Amino acid sequence: MTVAGRFAFLSSVTINFLFLIILLLADSSLSIRFPARAIESPPDPSNLYLKTAVFALGSFWRSEAVFGCLDGVVRTSAGYAGGSKSNPEYRNLGDHAECVQIEYDSRMISFRQLLEVFWSGHDSRQVYGQGPDVGNQYRSIIFTNGTEEVRLAGLSKEREQSRSKSSIVTTQIQQLETFHPAEPEHQKFELKRNPFLLQLIGNMGEEELQRSTLAAKLNAYAAELCPPRIQRRIDAKIKDIIRKGWPVLRDI
Image (tube, rainbow, N blue to C red; front, side, top):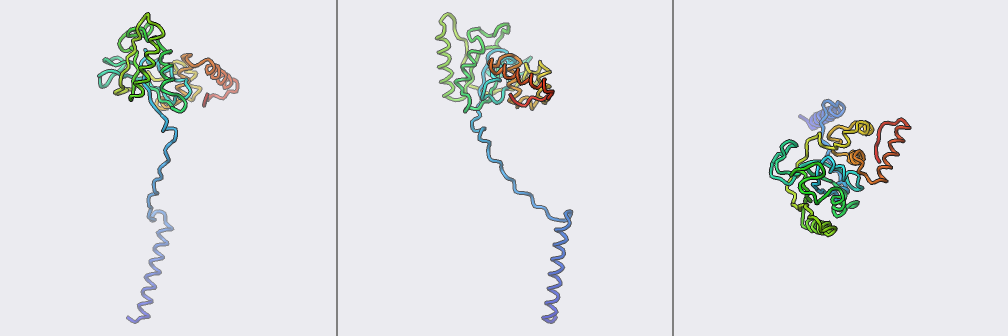
């Protein structure tokens, strides 16, 4: 083959190759797709300050509501801790205590402040019970995670005992091993007793209720355990929604 012939052949091959590439790019069904590079979302700065505390102070229906309305509390969960049974259930919880887990933003509220609410939220001098609820599962416990929490819990117990020498503070201070979430029907118990409030927030599903800060606050509101100023604020919001006829409460 002559030089001119080779050049003509190569030119023909090149043109055909380019034409094939154009067809491939034009037809989305034939085109080669490369996966997009995964872009990692930057960490949420608020998660860096998210901490967890667990307390036992009687029935977890009420205990969860005690903490739900506090500024800085992100989520609350009822559950079991403090015992050895691997899979506690409400009707068979073994030697566990009913308790509440609180996820909180440490920039807004501290473990020390949560301890103050813990002491004011129950009678720590009642032996194995709270009010009409009597039994080992209703005992008073501060669960700790780390030496600083142990120190703060110990100091707060001493202060509580110093308020009166006539009886003994029965509260235990115990290293948290495992928190076992309670069954769904025990979560946000006070809120679920008020169908109107559930409707106001859009009838959230169970999982969404568990994650919702608003649900935690309304659970406390339903139990009338929010500070008076917050109870009044929620009352006003609900009245405004009823007046306007707009059925969804987004925040308080």
